[in-house]
Length: 312
Image 1 (cartoon, rainbow, N blue to C red):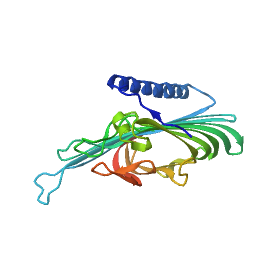
Image 2 (cartoon, rainbow, N blue to C red):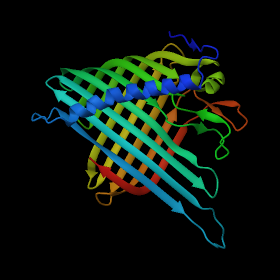
Image 3 (cartoon, rainbow, N blue to C red):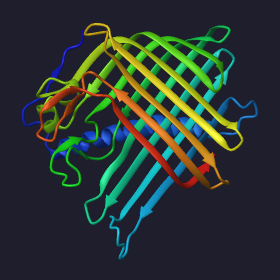
Image 4 (cartoon, rainbow, N blue to C red):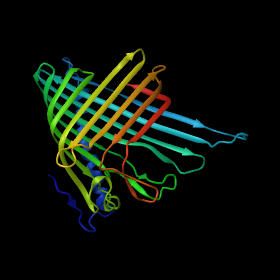
């Protein structure tokens, strides 16, 4: 349905890439700064509802003359989540931003990236009847820094800014029985995969053909979100499930992205966090230590930590 875009030879040099990254950052800021500014303007009718969380989770293990042995380790993970939702008459506009970054070190080894994500979602809906909305959704996600296949040696690059990046554009129906829960169903979804790092594109990673920087897919998608503060006293729950099926190519292989997170507040600034992220994409092949593709695998990431937090 979509064709891949062949990269120009010797065109994406370092300066060009720098300009490209500045362009993406500018586009990102040009979208969210106006949303935040609008949400902060005084409004007696309370058309906007805003909020979010910022947390820093830390852990450390240290040994000195410990007879049983052991290795020092330090880990730090930062997570920022914000939302700005607008509702007036039959119109509803929901916006969310999630930025996470984490580092870990064992002994004297190099720092290893343990988390790196940028996820932006914007959904507009027009009430059709009851809790149902005619809706359109934009979903963008990428990471910020270079990831490596062989940490802590860090010699084989596996990801980078905009490599990969995913952009979903879709229209469908949204079921919203409350502000905490929504189910979005789209029979018309365009999924675009960008790999703007030439080295990674030449290796044909993330589903693009070797040497191409772009892949387009057409299919259907579902997005389910539940967010509830104080589901029990001092415990917040967030869960998200994204599904996508490429109707033109192996529709039986459904892309899955599920995230679940529980925040348990000790007080206004101390929180224990439990989170689990599960991914499956048939186009992302597992690459072993020798660089051989071994087929798609279920990817999991989990976090159990304690640290500082602030809710607004």
